[in-house]
Length: 154
Image (cartoon, rainbow, N blue to C red; front, side, top):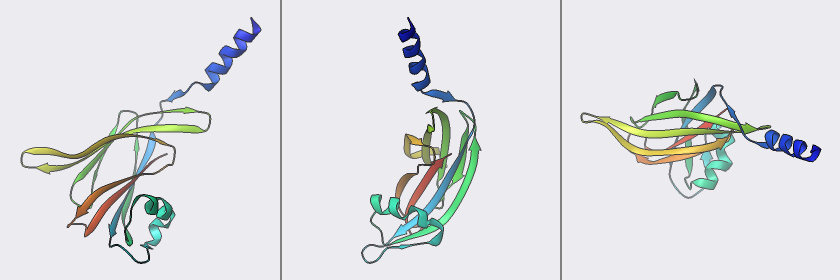
């Protein structure tokens, strides 16, 4: 009987716990351009150099903006992007086990047209606390290069 009780306690302790508190979401916008040659990265995003180099092949990365917002579970925040489009982020929840917390975010990039909202890209991501999700949106004449979004939840 003691073995069964101990086993049940271990299972309960190892099971993911759904967390109800709010999270802070940070969106960094980067303009990427050029190819070949030595890579140049603005001082404000030097901490992202390795992540950018793994996923993209541009010569220059320029910091455009960084904004944060606190979201409660089920809450949505809209950011206006440098290319004139919009980004909605919905915080769907978090679960954790010990020091590891995983956040679920639903992302939608869209434009506002006379006919209404036109979705450009839509996805749901799960990321560990503080781990960046890099999202390349393609070339934009407005931005003067490719707009890259770096999204973190903490």
